[in-house]
Image (cartoon, rainbow, N blue to C red):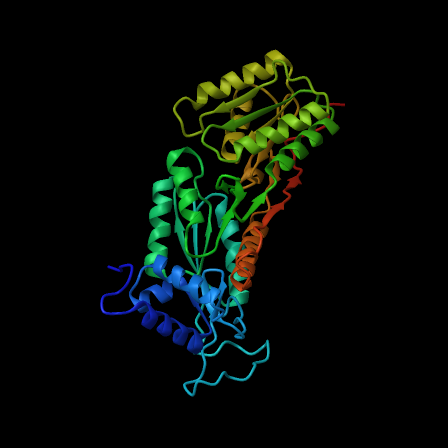
Length: 387
């Protein structure tokens, strides 16, 4: 167990050891210094602050370096000096990392390893492979307590240099997780989530799909085909649903579509026992209000709705056009579903790039970056003209 100051070691001795470690290695992370000097991360941060104020070292995100020492390439490891104490000569950019260079490790926690996130993971892995980084992947299951346990374990045992995470941000546990992430001693980039912290609601770094834009794009597509009532169905537990609903409503209002009586429902998902009755209620409301098109989040619910339409003798798209949101399995429906496709692979690539930039930037005052990427509309057979 680490303590504020290791027994038998004076603070000046500890700081001298820290400087020696930085002289030999170049850049060293807080958790590495804490482990080697057998003190807490808080103690290391205090030492870094003191030595930095004295002009002896400089702070970098997640660690420290000596003044005048260049940072190693952010995702190929930390440069180590030769045993003579002299810095090695500069190497060409194309030369592979030497055996002495430490591979950077990135921890990644996402809610699902089977739906939506595989393409996000693919984007991260592709970007990491180009940079020589190692990815440690875990699934959190949409539960803040599980996510925090996975993240804590990564920090304690995997020695990660940064975190890519899709956290639960709502409820007391979710809010506590966001605060915990903000205080983590390594850089953090949120994926498909946005969060603010502190009394001034400062943004955490994030990369997200513009789901509101994607929903609005679907509405505009349907209106261009002649539909004047476009309903919306989302599931209650989806973190994406509020953004989809916001974009749907904004587009409907901008296009002066009638919303009185138009279905706008937050429902159970297709695995819930009440789902069959929910489907009938949705279709009854469409028929009663003259709604001729629906935007449905997500694919499994949209496919199930199409099947129920066929059972009731409703033609898709003749009687009801359907646009799915996610485009995971939408093309496997009969008929294939028009769908909004979030840029999942690009999200993963951009998140990794943002974290790499944060690791490489020696300025502790670097502003937070928020990246927003637009989805695409993939038009298939489930939407058609009303003319």
